[in-house]
Length: 418
Ligand SMILES: [Zn+2]
Image (cartoon, rainbow, N blue to C red; front, side, top):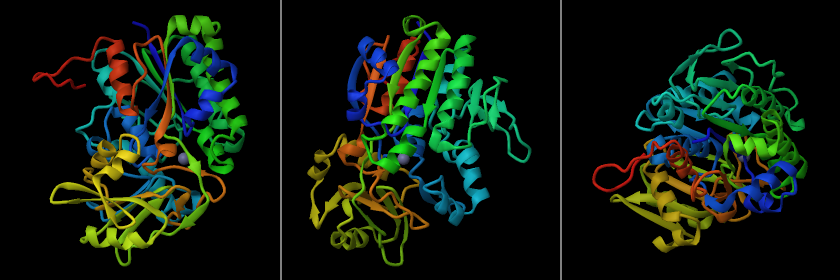
């Protein structure tokens, strides 16, 4: 069994992946098997990366959105919808939530991360820049005043935590020019040269950043830079052939993107709304009343709430569970999102073309966004090289990797569990 490299290109749509003519991606696509797979809901990065890392939907991992109401601490958690939203939520608080507490406090203990699962068997895991990283090894920060965190044995996070000295440049400056992916490439090259892991998550966020600005399927330069970051791993292995000789590889994204043509502020009267990108939540004692109010708001697409434990799906006054059959994996994703104890009582998937303004009123009008149940936001490319089958959902990546190491076993009672 080969070590596995999981490449996550944030926000890459299937159509962009399928049309890619960049050399590293083309080479891998020719060697592997490919399918379109499904994300989770809300299709927003902190939720999706937690699903990738834990192999579960938000009913298990409990990360509900980019922005949510913490019932226990009676405050907003904002993981970075926009700089304005972070400033509105308080910069130090938001940084701590995103960098430290997502993993240390918000990610449910009932969920097991892929790093925890593999390291428990003595394997070495690594993670570069992925925001869901919880693992068994304590890491000190590179700058004072930041708390230690627990992650994989090989752990690199935006220059802030570095388990090994690699000589990589500082990660954060000049994001528009792709410096974060360049940092990942530098660390990845170091790890591959030393064959320093059994499983590595190689997370490349710059594509999503570019695609929010340009709109989906047009961030070609950003994709070329993501491709160059993959090529850096291949070079370190001695070339593309040597790379796949040595490693099994998965290339995917965490969610898609769609065009933003109109923006609205989600209005739920006196109830608390947390909205960002193409998903919104309302914390309310009257879920049905709020859902009915959204019948008159064209920005609201499918609206979800629980009534007597049943999932209710509503759109423009129409109440019909089959609304969820019009979107990928709709019933399972809607149910899991609603059964997350940190979610609002009402969940809103934006209508096609619409985006919700965030805490600071920011949006991506004319560009790209994601978060909804709709196909454009919910479908991701999924390529597997040297593994049996590409996973059908981002929640099945963990299982695919565990199977590669012979660690996936059917649970008693016939139902398989990781
Ligand atoms: Zn995004």
